Image (cartoon, rainbow, N blue to C red; front, side, top):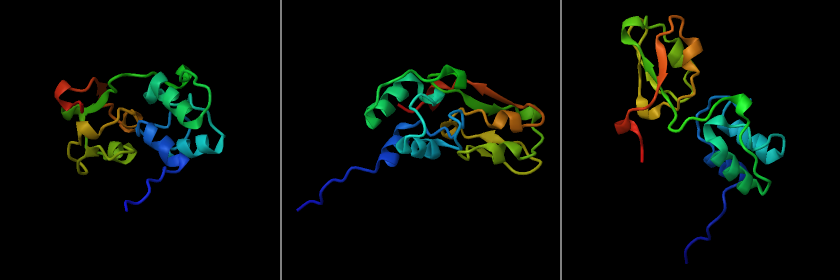
Length: 148
């Protein structure tokens, strides 16, 4: 006899619907804390710009509440999300971008040039203000880096 399928807890279901950018535009320290707040009823479904209107609708369906468009004052939705690129000639190897990246998409060593692992980059932009020489740009992802 096969084990009975169980429904994941509400927080887990909400977290799975979020884009996992960990950008903080929702006002929380990442997607999981935002999911926890929605499950607790202390945050609405409209706070995630990377998820866009479709994400807000999916969250509303999961919670059984009325759908609302995402709050555009929190940021803009881009599909596909941009990715960070380090301008090699300008990078001083300070490692501040590595420390700022919430998904560990930037690699490099102290005093050496850093590089963004494009398929891991969520386009959150948290590396931009961390860079003291402004050598990081957000650009559209390459077509061959997009995951179907």
